[in-house]
Length: 535
Image 1 (cartoon, helix red, strand yellow):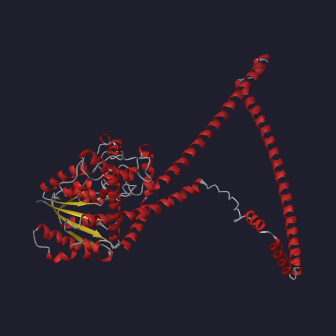
Image 2 (image 1 turned 135 degrees about the horizontal axis):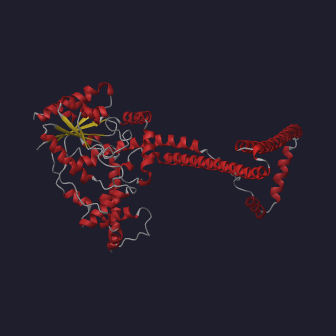
Image 3 (image 1 turned 180 degrees about the vertical axis):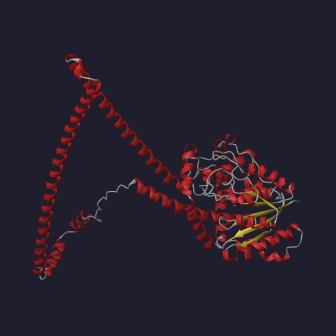
């Protein structure tokens, strides 16, 4: 069995750094296993290897797909990557499969992955629902998820209701094979395609969160926004958030910002076009005026002798008359402006006088109130006593009516929403985009770790490398990884590195027990639903 190095880990844990470090000492070639780096474009957003790094080590499966490609899937990746690995063996080099798309990695690790044609034409949801007498109208939440929970509750428990594509895929598998996806996965024999050496670059979550935030800030400095703007301009008409590179982390988060920015730009272009049209109209008017004047002058000149006039004199007279008309219009405009300014000044003076009067009235009212308060302190007790006696004299029906008439809550005055300037909104959306990008990358790193712990550690021996302290990276990560690789390819024992073997029990979170209980309860509910539907 041929030997292959697999470098796995969460985003931001230094997978590429380790692959380049190993390639210095070993004759290696790197195969990309990141689904978004397969596509052309968004080099900063997808964190592709730099030109210098690509020159040092041969890289494969990088920027091979057009951004508009929609039919690419896991099976195609494994079909393309396996012959590349064979070619690397033929060149007497070591293949390093490096990336964070875990199901792509899984397709290369194991031979017997579930391969079913992902053809939407073969999938008929209505037929499947009719088979189980499932009514879409009576669904409270996602109907496809509820249908899957009846057909295959085990698979449904692994998905969130919003993961529509995965839910449809498992329903499609059932319709094409007549078997549940969970049963097929259980019956599969997990045969390894190669003899793998799996190196897991891990990091403490709090440290990794800070590192990912810093990484986003660096991306901003490198020009990620300019990259998004250019990409959006080229491919906005073919945008599909559920396919290909368009679902890359980062791009989706900035779509609101990009929409507003280019909306403002289009409005500016329209305004400029309108101004140009106005100027063109003015020039045409000038031409018409000159032509009319030329006709008049030509009629006058015909009566006079030819010696007194020439073409130059005619043009000069036309220009002078046009200038006179302009001056007349300008003087009219100036007079109108003077009138407007005078009216505005008079209004301002009146407003100031009214304000002064209002302030004086308020001061007088306050003085009167203070005097009344000092006089009426002694009479307060009498007023309270009179109120109580009046309330006692009222009948219970009258009391209820008074309570009903009294409003419970004071009505709040409707506040007028301030119109936000589009440029300010653009800035707000830009900052929101960066904060969302940070949040999404942190969440994605947690997802990746869950996959490694739940789907890999109990099946294949995985060597854990802690990248939490960058100061001692070579001691903690680089040197141990190189020693493990050297001994692995020399067929020497790896007993001294047994303490680095990752165990599921150690890395599994404590909250997993609570989740398993919830899953059991869900299974019971789904069983009851199945029994009711069968009856």
